Length: 143
Image 1 (cartoon, one colour):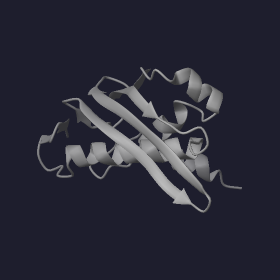
Image 2: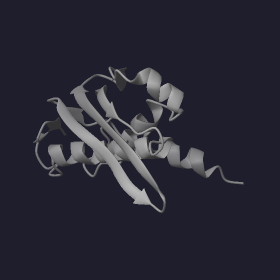
Image 3: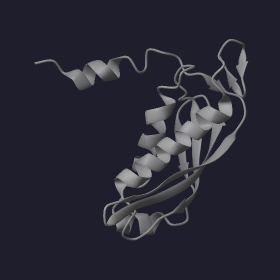
Image 4: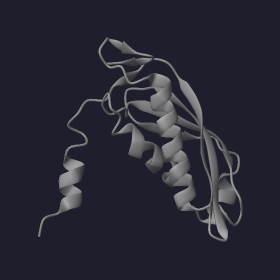
């Protein structure tokens, strides 16, 4: 039987990372109503240029998120990587991610809500960078 997950993951590290030249701060959100229950998560983060992928968690509510059981900070970082690894101009993983602030709800926040908020943050980073990869700089990203 084929190991599709392994085959899928093999292509990821083969492409070099684009290089970020300036820090970018974004607010990723997941706010939606699904039936009687909602999903809510917000995360403010900054990506800085780096030689490797790093994460710094400066969120003051870390212990509350652990009690909530949402898998903090993995959920938000995985969502961010879902987008940054598949950017149109190529993967962007040589960054230092600084998790700065978080907003959550005791009932409506979940692992999935924070992953979606991380994805939203990733999309906003890509928007801030721009998608024209024809020159040597792409609005803060060296290509």
